[in-house]
Image (tube, rainbow, N blue to C red; front, side, top):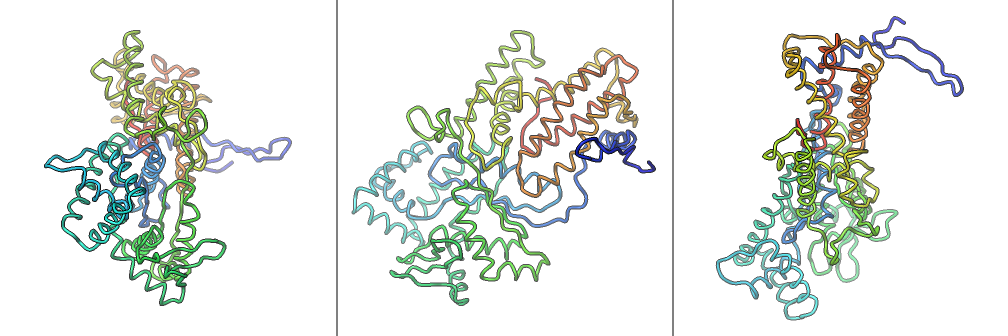
Length: 518
């Protein structure tokens, strides 16, 4: 066949599928581009957009717990994939930093805490529970708390100072989690939109879409939904509906986003569907179509629950919510013990001094991959034993496969005086001859297809699946094709490096660190 890609075509027996064989020259060319550039070029036909990804979004004055894991890591991966292909991404942390809870916290802290020392976040978690109990049980305390909310919204100096204190302490604790997870995010919480809400309500009112219910609440009814969007409560206050509609308008018209993705648990799917429908109903999407030339895409990624072995929400033995920092650090501690054992058994390629950094990469990566390697909508049971397993579809297996490739390149220097970096600098070529070389090269060729598929729904499991299949191909290739000390050594070393480059790009998209030696 006179075709630059296809070598031959055949019709398979039975169902009648058309089977095509890709030319080795085409695969070689693709592998050599990766080798020479030392990078994987993203798809070129993606039109750059301004995109908002709303993820993580913990509450101020509360510690991040296991329930925040999925939104945080799925959001980070979504941002990385979008940025990789050239989109401008606004990484938004829509923190809960406004509302009645601050009235009760300000009141409780004022009564229980004095002096120049600031409480740490663990104290605040206890304070929050105690303040909530007082709020529910003590009518006078409740009234004072409600007055504090009014004062806070009115700019009262004492209330603002306490509120800022709570926010600052919380941010420092959030950052500990984000640093462990390699997450970059820009805070833009509920308080930011508070002043923008009245204009949004007026716009809906002017359009004749607001119905004033008994008691004075201002609502917008959405077809096919039983409950309305409540833009203003009967007491004149604002809730989630008000804030999210103001946020949606800000993102469309001020940030100029043509795609907005909000990542929360699945239980909020109806809420965001209502918000998105209301945005279309008021004409915001049509207005942006005239301005941008495309109708903005408003999406919600709803994820399932992290469960314990009993199939219920993952909690501590005492029934408390698991702190995210503790969950992550336990994975690292287990990996540290494992690596020390491997060093003692002379099965590791690292020193004792390198254990903390390698254990952190493997431990945090294992927790992330165990979550990301599944459809976000599904629930799953959290298991350290399963996620830290060196065999099977785990980050540990994948990272060892990558380290094996780099180990071979290191041995080539030590035993054969052949440096793959020198081969790359000399523009040496990869030659595809063996069937197992072809299979590996063909799998690497599918990287661009995987990226394009992932851009549609932003499910990280596509990247995980590709990476796992690639690692399997690596294992077969290395078992069947001897690399060192053969006539094909230079070509196969370059193929090893090209494969490692593709794997590293996948790890980068998944925000998983990759040690060169383990």
